[in-house]
Length: 112
Image 1 (cartoon, rainbow, N blue to C red):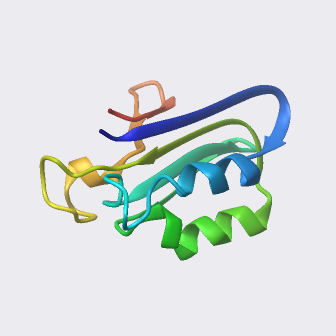
Image 2: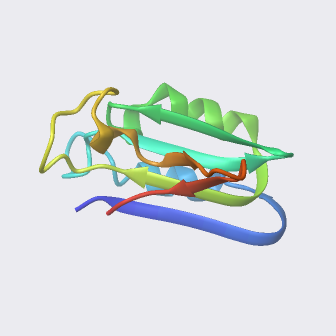
């Protein structure tokens, strides 16, 4: 089963330490080796990083950790592809997702 990590805080915090531990659950040896993603608020915008490879070996995880990104809201997902093929074009692989609403609001979501 996929795993989710959510961090919400009153004051901006970094995700580096939590992301490192979370990414270790997505190794070649684990069931959750079929991609990962993270989405977070950055100032007045939303940023997202995704990869189809194991999170534990991802250069994107290392990049995010080195940036020491600060936010009041992070949502991360590591995937176990028990249904669907592993690809950036597959809706299943694209977690977390961003959804634009009619009024211009954007929400972050993930499925498990």
